[in-house]
Image 1 (spheres, helix red, strand yellow):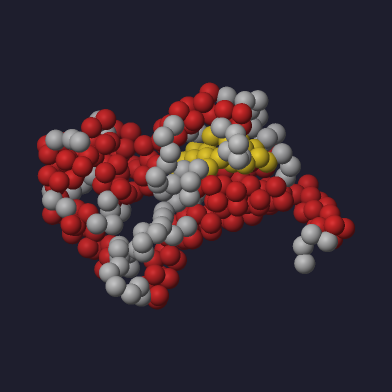
Image 2 (tube, rainbow, N blue to C red; image 1 turned 120 degrees about the vertical axis):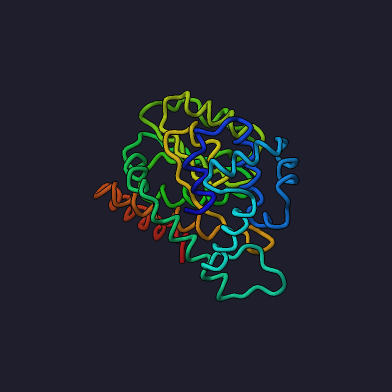
Length: 268
């Protein structure tokens, strides 16, 4: 089991200090080998003893064993940051593995069914998560009506969640570098009674207990900027499953939209 999976599995049983340490590990998986255990503890704002306890709770004897674990991942086809010119074949292999992990998530059919049957759907995302949220909304609206995206320009998220209730679904896209207030938004969204689905990378595990369903989706950090190939693949698979769950109503809507395109000459 990879270190990020171990953290996700054990997160609820960690102390608050250990959770801070775990969040630091997840943020620095790319360059973890360049740090000493004491430096990681300082970054996390925890004691060295806390960091050592975290290593043991994750099944590692010490930090050296964590380094060995990461080296094993690299030799198995999961290299981290690449110095110099990137190897296209290696990058493609890494992306393929990430995409497979994303689209094989066992709860995708469950989420698709909930989205298909909901009265209203809101998809929310900020920063780099917003394009993923917007793409998901644009695909879902092909299959069903009343799908919103937020926050829209000129508005805050408070306007978006008012009016949602137990019959609705709120999908929150939250990949790393989430904005301040993210936790508060999840709390408000869940308080509406709606089903709240969080799509995020392993660093979002700290928020998993605040939502109804968490779909973990890896990002790749081998280059200077994060790759969102896996999130976009997950979005496509999820939307396809929603269309299937909508049945004939979804097919009729797709045909009606296509006819509208043709009448208005909107799409070549």
